[in-house]
Length: 293
Image (cartoon, rainbow, N blue to C red; front, side, top):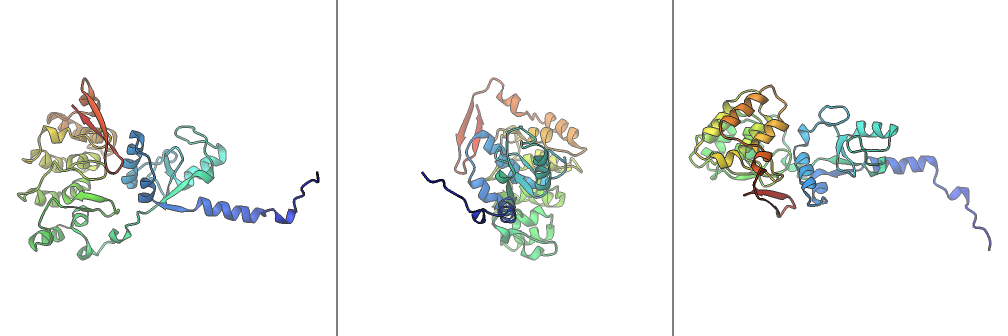
């Protein structure tokens, strides 16, 4: 049997190998496409929630807001620079220590729905939900008064491209107090509604991100459509508004928000689950929703 000889000229050069690696490591997958490829476990639902709120996600390496979000095969998210630097020293995930390599990393890009992106100064081009998100009260009022928006509870697209949010949810999340006051003055407004992606209501949004005043949260709690069931509504991974304040709010008002919610009979996920019957069922978007009975 004759030996098979390899011509050295047929082997890829170091430069070509480097070029191919660079192409792989810099390829970008839009966040919405990545979400579509995910499974339907409870852990996947938690990762999806993080991806929907990527702008506020913290990198576990540098402890700063994540830049150029890059996700591992074990679905942990880091700054691109941080995770590549970490892998130079040890080929494992900094969070769970699972073995990973640079070729397996996925750089997450913007959602495909770029047409919903807005820039400062283009208020006249904004949709109703985005106007609420950005606190443009005059634009919000114009949508209502002109009849362009006939249903104040209509669900639309927020500025990052994710669909299924009401204007009240977005105004509550970004502490647009004037907009919240105006929306709550409208007779049809409903605080109890939840979004179509992670299952948050306006209280989840306010507890998650409010940092400057308790007034907005008090207005929501005092509204006629807000009751104990709304206060203890669980999202797609079983978290209540109180959980959002306890685990996600990084502001100085965190403890005051928790105290206020407690005074209004708010409970955490673990308190609701104590002695209760839990049921998880799959939704159309592959999330699992927790029902507590």
